Image 1 (cartoon, rainbow, N blue to C red):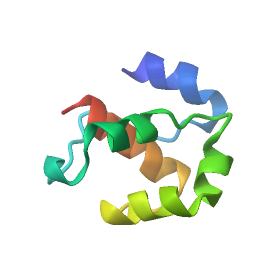
Image 2: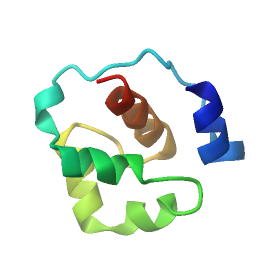
Image 3: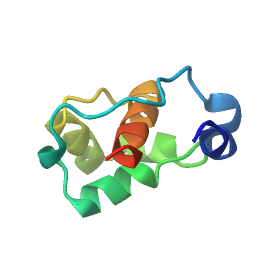
Image 4: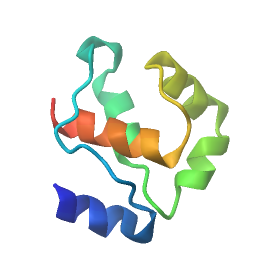
Length: 79
């Protein structure tokens, strides 16, 4: 998984726990997971400006920053 994240995020990759899991998986549906997984180094700034994306992050108690998004992506892949 580390190699995948290195390709997606390149020099924006944060130090992460690749075994991370959500406390409550039921907060996100498939479409919301897909939205979070679609964030990458080329588009994250645009996502962060969207009110709808900010609300999605708030729904799962997530800060709108690179570390939190990458961590959420790992949690989704570890479902």
